[in-house]
Image 1 (cartoon, rainbow, N blue to C red):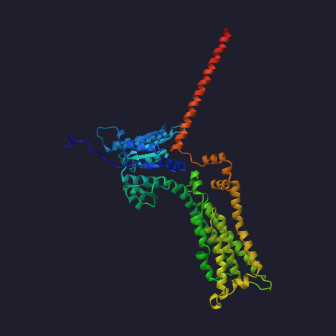
Image 2: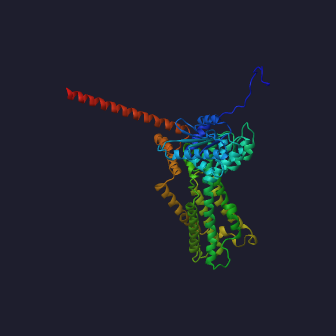
Image 3: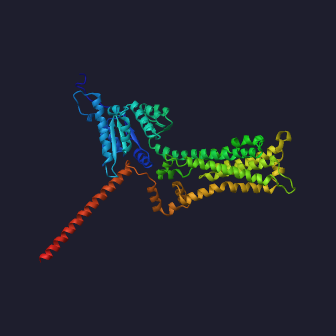
Length: 521
């Protein structure tokens, strides 16, 4: 009633468009092996246009649209009839995908919020999830914040996979909190998503580097750290157990109390920190060029039981070598030129010195990336042990006790002390060197091959080989502009083959006509 005889002066609107680099980011994430679902509050037409803009949808992709509009009107128009119709649509779509014979066929599931009300019920949600998992892309439009959280929970609990939710508005908070990992984008829609998230980024395209680079690095660092902790503490703790068994479990410790305090606090803590902060198996640009390296995390290649038990076995072997060699060398015969034999404190100090060398050299062999910080922390920890032993031995006997002048007067003048240390280092690192040499030669992992290519600069000498390796290190995907280009190439090949077959048939027909004419002549 009011909008009559008005003159349009102007209009205002909030700009809502795709950020820069979104299609490229989605393409690289898809090549890294991630499944991408879009949960939006936009209407279906807008959501489909967004799917085409970010390459989640493409020409030739078969769209499965499950909508409440497809429900046939019944006389009763009951909720049961609507649920049965939606279940029928889901079942028919699943059957269509199963009977599809084209291996390159791609399906996209598009569903609206009103239909999700029925699809997320207990008797239909797992059928909906099974359909969504086999589709290349999933777009849910007109979705409420609660439905976003329910879909995220269904994907997390139904598949057992790790889920990541990313959003920029307050309506994404429930989804971000429900996912295993929440990422908030700080933008014009407020800071609610950022405050509720685990990580915050400024633009969507930064998600690629967060996952493909830092996600890959963090997985390797944490896995190596935990496995090394098993090795280090087993190698140290079992030597104490062996000595207790050797002395008939008398309760006598072969190490000084100050040694036990310094082992985990000072002498072996900094190298582990350097491993967890600075370790890089490949540089960041290589991670972006080889997205499939990210799959080492989801496949759990570096933290499975085989690797954990391997490091534990290596720790048991190191403890046996350290104890038996030191016991055999220092227990009976003299170790100095004046015929002096080693007492328990001298043998314990020599054994502890071998442990410090063995565990620190082991972590140095484990690392793939070195800076001056790692060198200072590893070799500085070993040097700190000798400095402590020398300074502690200079204290008065009331303070130093049985360690009085232990390094300067007892161990350092004896060449067998230094030779034993070298022998223990060589013996304890031998299994790891054999294992890594065999693996790199016979069954190398992806990052092993890349490391050798980069080390020998083969990527600069043979660019074609480098491009071929990069093309191999990508997960096969049916979304993204790379999949769109591949589909176009396949389509052109099919057309060329058809043209070639038509030309062959025409040439065969003309030759038959010529033969028949010659026979008539």
